[in-house]
Length: 77
Image (cartoon, rainbow, N blue to C red):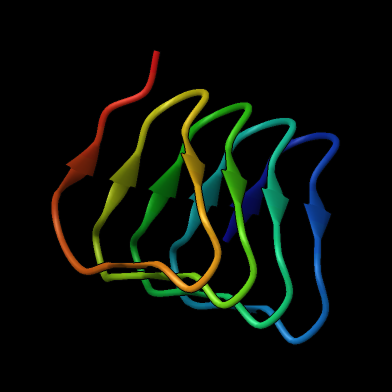
């Protein structure tokens, strides 16, 4: 697992194997990031977010509370 600079990670967050996360990342409480997910720079994930295995989140993306992203790529700026 690799997490970039200036990461703010809430309580009871689960980061599984091979997660790669960029700089200036914010992850809300009780979120789950499954294995092999990739999260770019300047991303905000709300509380209770679940990111599925292998999902790619692009730069600048904001994902709201209680959201599940099961598969695919979320394009940022």
